[in-house]
Length: 196
Image (cartoon, rainbow, N blue to C red; front, side, top):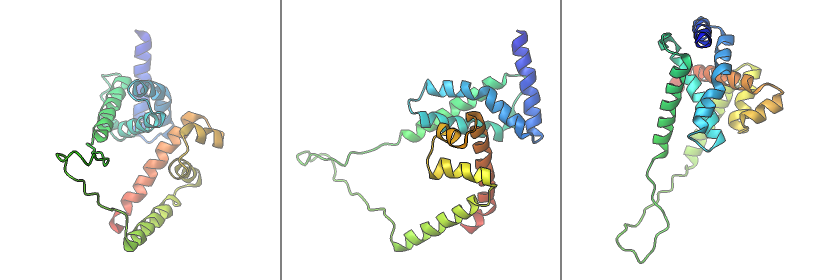
């Protein structure tokens, strides 16, 4: 029982420090609970990338709403509730109905499928290139160590483990810094959203 009390006191203190702006407190919270969140998500998902992405999304949502955390409950319980809701949202997005484009011509009961070519015309391609160039410019406004993480994860599509190996950095640090880099990039994008 004393162990649970120690965790609760530690977590309450870390949450308070995080709310006061301590990046170390955020990283510590991630470090203490990353494996637990990953284990929960791994029990429901088979794809490693999905597990990592949803774990990051869970911590992102939790840290965005950290001021709503009720200290009378265990932080881990609150965090796993967020992970569960994030997982539900993920499955809802995956449940989009699909139709097969393979059609047996002898089956007249099924309607013919009209498949629209959604590829961009030359003007659409130009607009996409301009937006990509603008996003690239915004990524380059990040500090070099954050910029490198964003590029490795989202442009080079490396896994967290591959980034950790490439940068010779602990996996937990990669996850925490990538979380912070995404937040900083979102702030930049939000401040420039009128340009779109």
